[in-house]
Length: 147
Image (tube, rainbow, N blue to C red; front, side):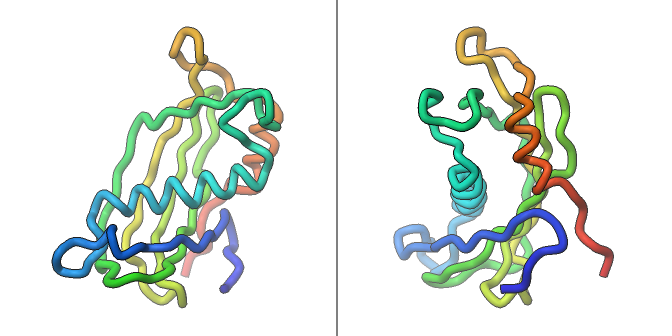
């Protein structure tokens, strides 16, 4: 696997039950691949859904906006890659960009962006991202090198 010039690349698994009758990954599952990759990354950084166990006290991130463009379908059971990075970190939100790639990185199956907002668990309104989470996110901040 080629190391990215920015962000992080995570392999994810496509299972048989995620395929439609034509043997293609159902469109809604591309977002699940992204969620699995991002969750895996943050778990490796010490994040846990239980705030008592988490290295980051904010444990509630809500998706505010999501867009995806599909290019080439994923067919069959496989292990594509999800390449994601942060375009921007604001006071309480972060903008992720992502690409779903073939395992050899020669095909872009889909690409898009997702805005996540940190919310206060009591008021369910936006809350600042902690210094610890912001520091850990710096490794994801960047833009792809121009080809």
